[in-house]
Image (tube, rainbow, N blue to C red; front, side, top):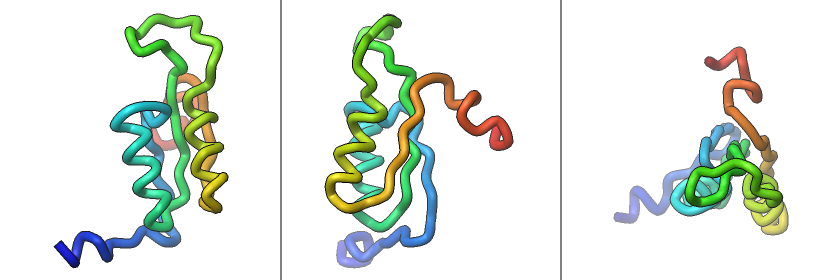
Length: 87
């Protein structure tokens, strides 16, 4: 609907856990496109949930958002270590 397409998040900050890939990344990109500053958290596990992946999906997603002129930061690891005052 037209009301939903007009929804903006300017001046807001969102933490998107699991935001490095898939649906989480899509949410982070949508929020950023609507003016939200985004902190993308991703544990950096491979898609099967195994540790040891060398890539940093959180930073890759944040870099893509920044390349579009939006504000985004990344955090690789447990979201509780990123923002302990929030948990």
